[in-house]
Length: 122
Picture 1 (cartoon, helix red, strand yellow):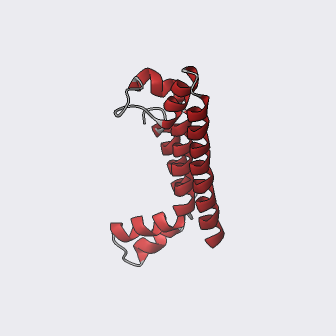
Picture 2 (cartoon, one colour):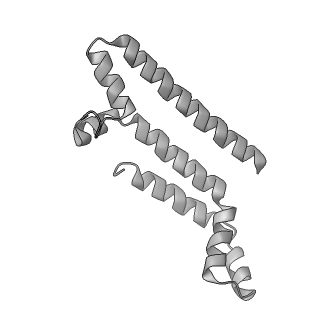
């Protein structure tokens, strides 16, 4: 989370600053409350925010070294899928490592497919 937060925050800030600059003043002149402003800005930037979340997820699943150093790779507590792949292949359990790798790849493809479908709805 520590490594991913700055990337996601920068993407979120870029999304909000890329929003139409006339949106907030227009809504304020119409008497909109802060919750309405927040909802409308979120609606306008939802795809960029979703891309930021997906980028953060991709970065998180790819951080094998950092996860092993910080988390310690303790089974049931801090083991992630990428650290499990590294552990299994280092033990010579290539079948298990390959199966976990294919599962992780399938998850990544599924998330990219969902993101693509959401972007086409735009």
